[in-house]
Image (cartoon, rainbow, N blue to C red):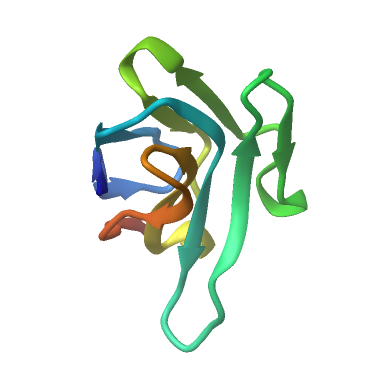
Length: 118
């Protein structure tokens, strides 16, 4: 099995920055696409950003120009740098990864809370 463990969430004022990390552990032969999703209270989970194994990235329109996503394949880790945070960015952020281990599966982290105060 593979576990994804997120860290880096917290409380920040509007305009501030946070960096989320998600580290995968377990039997891992390759990390394929990785991404970050978020879910605000009363709303559906939505894609924030994703990155392929080759480094191609995709962002939600609402975060373009403010968030960046990166990965360290040697550490099986994906990062989300969030700048110029807004109150509407408040949500639980989940890491997602397509992992090839004993089999190829899609995994989710447990989520980390990000709260942006106005």
